[in-house]
Length: 125
Image (cartoon, rainbow, N blue to C red):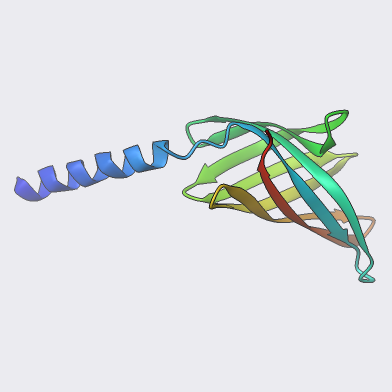
C-alpha cells in the first residue's frame, strides 16, 4: 500500500512539473536553411504557438505576413515536434526547449532533395 501511495505522489509531482512548461506565445529568431549542395540561406522565423496539455497548435513562418498552419504538434518534456504543410510539402520540426529558447532543426523533402534548417528562437517581446 505504501508503495502504491508513493508512486501516486511521484506521478502527481511529475505532472505538476510538466504543467510548468508552456510554450504558448510568439517566438522569433533565426531560420538558416541549407540545401544538398551546401548553400546556406539565412532568414527569420516566427512561431505563434498555442499549447493545450501536450498538444501544440498555431502557425510558423518567416514573419507575420507569411505563416503556415501547424498540422501536428506536441511537446514531451523539453522536446517539441511539429509538422507543417509548406506549399504541398511536409516540413518536420524537431526542437528542444532549453533555457527560455527553442532550438533545433527543420527538414523538408522537395523534388527528391532534402533541405534542412537550423532554428533558434526566443520569446518575442
